Image (cartoon, rainbow, N blue to C red):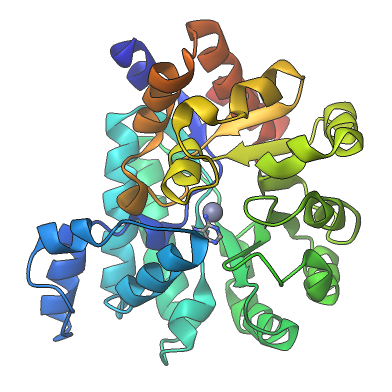
Length: 324
Ligand code: ADE
Ligand code: ZN
């Protein structure tokens, strides 16, 4: 089964590039950029990855991202992720990046986007991995800050296809970002949003109605609202679910408690993703394997989950046909 899951052609639709920063690369970049880390060894970093909730994780994730400074750093980060994709037969990916995490430290958004884009281009040419980039706004910051970020990104408009919403969910509803999402859609960008990870089902309704998202990131708390489930099934809105993340951030106590296969059984368009693979114990292959071990995922279910991801990708029907 492990071999089957690893070799199954997969598409990833929910992965934060900053969350693919492995401790080894974090050390290398810290050395390269003369940055002092509050750890002496890679093992110490890994030992710190013991989170009580989303905010515990975000505090370390933003701290780790501070080693990313130059275009080459963003290239190396993205390239390392693509090499992981190659080993697990992830043939299409739509990674997120958080520009505000970097611009707040004085790094030009062009440095970030050019480094990432160059690696994605090499991934297409050298590894045969297709990709689309998604720019995420940090929801703990203001809508004005998000609007400024979108404006700063406009010279690089051709390098990303959608905007998303991430970071601390509770207390920061999608409604807070309605105008900046309106603006993004007027520019021809697609929209996605994290909703229903720690936040209530109401945030999923808002993401659908106010932000007009094409996919919901996480969305597992939809199970608390039968009317919402009915709508998600009817509209076949994709949910980008991240099983290892949800257990590591204590959305579910253990994998055997996860609702992902129940949601699939109810007819939702569920996809499987790694979220922040360097922090949560694995990439796509490990997420699928964890579902097999914790929830007895079958081959047929794995194939359905993989097909759902290709069907939900932000590519043309012709490109979808070529991928599958
Ligand atoms: N940023 C990176 N990972 C995230 C997650 N799981 N939820 C919200 N924001 C994030
Ligand atoms: Zn996420």
